Length: 356
Image (cartoon, rainbow, N blue to C red):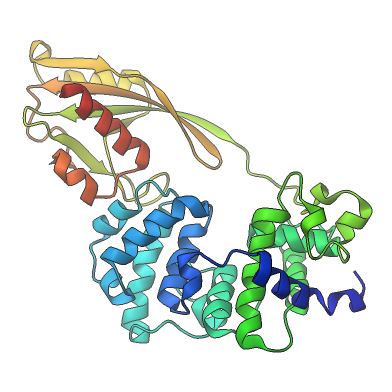
């Protein structure tokens, strides 16, 4: 795209966003960095429609960064349960504590400083700074990356960090030059909106795009070849055996997952690599005549780059008070207040319903 074509890109995006973009979302009605930050973290890898209810519940329980910083991690994880990508929730809690401890409860006002906080990368920092403080900084999330590579005809392979840096420079060159107080929030939102509703991965609606007259990919007739990224994470498949131990009081035995990996730090039923290991463990629980062991319906849980084939086994009867070295018994009324992965919560809810 020529230099002349670049000059009015920001103006076209700003004007389009005002008349056709999303202007009704709750986090768009504020310049409070706490609320904007919360929405940006929740929206990573998650659809807007899913985030809306979680966002409202979080604000009801944690109306400001101080309230969030003082919460127990289990409560934060419990409210997050179902949103997935649980590292976001742990970093959210850590970030709130750091903002209070190191910044007096006030979020830094520059993208550079925001990016030093846990869980805030360069693009998220740019979004918060642009929306809340009108700082002239770019963002480059997945949607915006797609819009800009198509607009510019950026053919370099983004699997290379060097090429990624070049795209950041290109993004910076397109930023608004004037009226930054209003232009930066609207331009930033406009790029997000274009990526979400117009410049989609497949079948982009180029006829509705305000940048169609400037877009190199449209001119070349092949928008879907952008962005170019050759290195992709290989999809893996794993099989887990889930041991659902339920005592005579109706409580379920839960353990914390390791601090790294899938569902890190969350509560979960004991996990075994295979059925032999699980069955061998059950034999050590006590007299087989006093324990009932029932295989439940296996199910698939799909993660971004991994398929989890989950095989639950429900064990009831005379179970020891301390069936494993680590863990605790939790009743149904306690499940909502702790961090449980969504598929485990659904599993426990379904087994509870069967016993009624």
